[in-house]
Length: 596
Image (cartoon, rainbow, N blue to C red; front, side, top):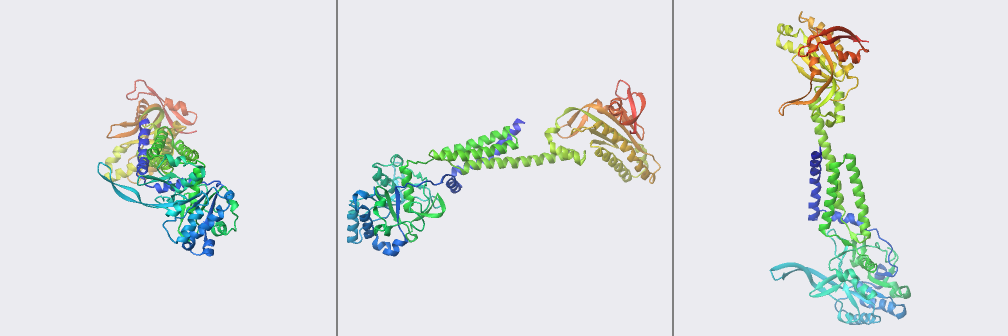
């Protein structure tokens, strides 16, 4: 049984192990990312010291196309915000690329406005491409920065800047940020990192220590930092003084496109349905830096290890547990992992979700399917063994209990045994054509079988014109000795009807001789590897056969043991002691005549 469970557990691991292969290859990684978005990205309270001023539709209506006033208009905004040093923001971040000279007057105006206070950060932009490098051992192709655009010279003298690039995942969703990149031999920092440095005085630790991309824990949803979708902090309203500058005193102000026509909006991990403008993406990244809210994604090897451990746990349950235990364990394991992953995220770790949960579910589904197939095969096997020998009701009971309950390998059990033989059948067979003999024999065997089944016994075998039946095996049967004796009487009564039919064909007389005994016998599958039958053996069986040989046509002979067990329920006639073949002592014999 233990080996069987181990083999079943190993079989259940096979399809679930496929999850490890898929995880290693990154198949369905997009689904895993979306599941993580659903689990982890819950939002929160936005920093009240971060404001977003949007270059929105109102601004376009008031000032015209952005390219016509971008530098002069931004100069006006900076003058409005930085006009009074005591009320100036701590940092002003311009999420706009001011690359190259345009109109000299506008360029100069913006540079001078940026010089009013040392609090302005603007953007640079990197273009990535593949380049061939000689690494000393040969040539390799690597992705690197091929162009890097920076603010024009006059502006660079008065501002800090950081790259505004935010990568998109394979499904087009923003989930990660880059803190630093290499431009040639120089390290360049992101727009959010430079805002942090300007505000705090140093780089955020997660940027200074790591070069890889980091997972963004979004706090604000689309329009949260701006105010609302329809009424926020408009660039035009602030630049014209309609919104007082003192509102932003000591705060962090981000300025960026807030109009669909400016093509700067993205779907993010916190909302796949409503796009978020780029300036608010930077606001989210900056808030995470200010709160030191780091989220570390596990290395691929660690994720594979988690999935493997869960598979092994499920395999262990397969070995030791039943179906209900398996389902319960899978539910607890999945729920526990789901909750645990959320707790890990709160403590800074991003755990994979799809693959570990899929491993649990696939393992469970396969186990259920395998158990169903195995059960169907077992039932089919039992039907093949017992379908011809027991009644439909007994077969149903066997199938409910299963093969394990039958102990088909062999057991010692108290049973009742009935043998019945057709008296006078040999002379009859000699007087009729073979096909008529077979027809009559089948009618008599049909009668014996029906009588056995009617009393929930088991037809063990047919021996020529004789039938052997057992009671209380393979399934436990109440009142089995009574049922065996009643079967004999039912056969005698049924034979009377067959005799009338036989009189129309021949003058030969036939009838049943029946013997019934009870006691211990060995029952089970007995035979060889090539041929094996379910039967009973032992003295109890031999005695029943000897009683049948003593019975005349129409007689049901029973042993002393049978008589003692059911003497109050049947009418018996004592026939004395007789010598039975193969049995040393003489046996007391009784003839059953009817039911009391």
